[in-house]
Length: 316
Image 1 (tube, helix red, strand yellow):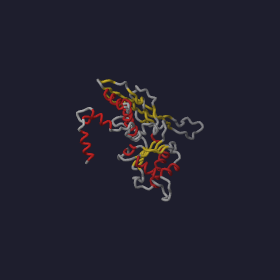
Image 2 (tube, rainbow, N blue to C red):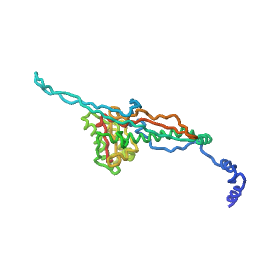
Image 3 (cartoon, rainbow, N blue to C red):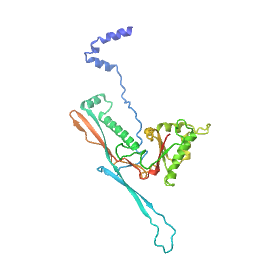
Image 4 (spheres, rainbow, N blue to C red):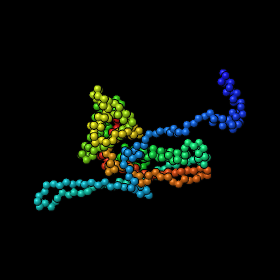
């Protein structure tokens, strides 16, 4: 009660009155503020950071579309007579693939007062922070485009490339599957690429959704007495797979809208993301007392000259 009376009395002093600027000053005297910034954290844009897929930036940024040609051979030699004139013919075959290139844009806005306020607080540079926010928003969108494509355009993603192998996990529902069943599903998927290409293609990368990654990286593999996780067993059983990773968006890319696992060969001759222009800033535009900073990039989707080197495993 005594403390309450003291507090009530203090409010009556001039420096604490609501109609006095001194009230704000006194408030600042008793408020401590951390000088460090506590930033929100977001899922890593793994498709966009270049680790899961090669990027190609060789196309001129002024182009509105690009094409690439796939070329193969047909015909085989046969046993013929010494004087034969009708030798079996060899030839070449191929096709040209045409893709669009689209501009990707994002902008930030801040006023002169925003700059003054941020400078007064002295904790961050508002222009730099907003530019970083633009980069984050840009990369999140491109990460989605690379993974799943851009609806309404010819820009397809890694998971929906035409011609890739699409398989369903025999066991399915890894949340209740045994370690041996999960290993069997992955063994079938990895071997399917090698079998479908007659031994030409051998994958080196496996990308899981988060839930599946948590299962394989922590669940113990059979026998029950073993302390080896499913992932440790897989690393030993498939040494040709040099990268085992996860990406959050893989939880909704299957034909049924569920989780999938991508198995592929991470090689630019097999699959690459096309960027005629990486993200660049346009000079700041002043609108009255505000500034608008625009950013753009040019994106041509994902091209897969060797689609049989890529497999999407649904139903996990």
